[in-house]
Length: 171
Image 1 (tube, rainbow, N blue to C red):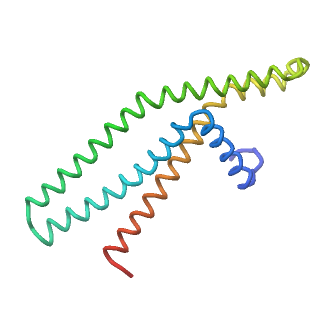
Image 2 (image 1 turned 120 degrees about the vertical axis):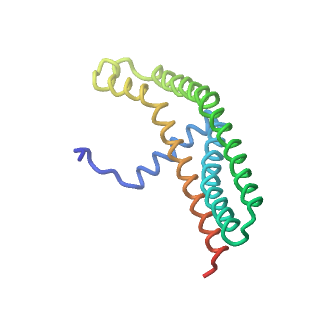
Image 3 (image 1 turned 135 degrees about the vertical axis):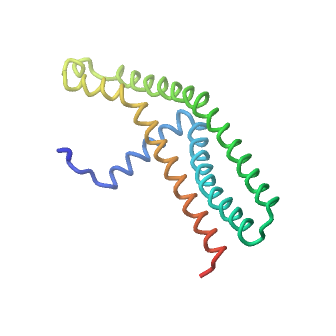
């Protein structure tokens, strides 16, 4: 266990929303794309459940092998398209956006440092905190946007799978 004091959940949420606002300000297209990516991951979870349901239905109820092959083919095509997008996003788009965020955050931190009194930098504790903040700023921002995307993913998956379950077997 850590010896750090516990933080209030309201403060944690406030800081996370602040960081999301910063990311949305610096790289708005990336912010939107990450939220859409989270929704697509939720749809991917839902599609796996939906495809499995239709495949089992084709195999057990209808017994038509051609329809089962069609469901498998559609599922494979859907996954292939999704993973090609995912590879493009992770290998090409994501690194460029991370670099853009890094540059913009550091530029703002340097601009803020110019307005500070030089005596602040003589204080070793202040200087260490400032350098630590510079080193951690973009990494932490990317972690927050990743967590927000993951939350979107889980919410979309849960809502869509629950709606499928209630459609198949209403209460």
